[in-house]
Structure formats: structure tokens, C-alpha cells
View 1 (cartoon, rainbow, N blue to C red):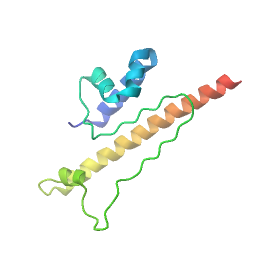
View 2 (view 1 turned 30 degrees about the vertical axis):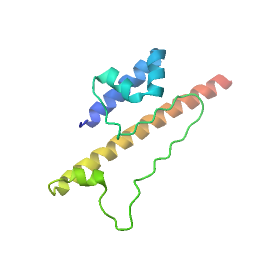
View 3 (view 1 turned 135 degrees about the vertical axis):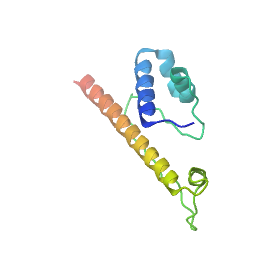
View 4 (view 1 turned 45 degrees about the vertical axis):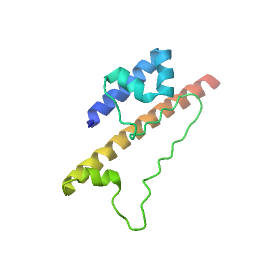
Length: 125
């Protein structure tokens, strides 16, 4: 499955919008985000693609650890799959896209966290 950056952004926006008005869907997002995304888009996400959903209640921090490199500095399975046939540009395209998707996801997480923090601050006064 291949998703464009635009499709990822549209999906995230759709999930957030529906979760904001549908308590059952919000609960599904927290327990099985893969099923929730399929409900919204009709597309399945591979279980290898990790998605973390954080409820905006309270304060949270996410730390994303990079993939561990072995001492021999060999390509990972993901890197090997993306360069099948020896295409270095394929690897660059793949990792460039993943980087921008991760960056967009981080920005969305920050916006949601800021909103939650602002809401919590407003409620405390």
C-alpha cells in the first residue's frame, strides 16, 4: 500500500473530525486505530506501520526512537525492500516521503497537544 502525503493528511483530518463528534468512533480510535482508519477510508494499513493515538486529556510527550543500526551498518529490511532492483533514487524517494509524513504527523500532534493544553488552561481559570 502506498499513501501520498495528501492522503495521509486527509485521513488524519477525517479521523480527528469524526472522533470529535462520535464517542464510539473516538473509543475505536483509542483501541484499534487500524479499524478506525479503515472505517473512514475503506483502506487497510499494514500492522507494521505504527500509529499511536493520544487522547487529548492530560499532558503527553512522544519520543520517537530511530531504527537501531547494527555495528556492520547494513541496510534494514525496509531499506532493502525500497531499493529492490538497485534503485538508489527509490530509496531516496521513499525516505524523503516517510520523513515528510513523520514531520506532518509531528506537527499535527503538537497542534493537538497545544489545543489540549490551552483547553486545560482555560478550564483552570
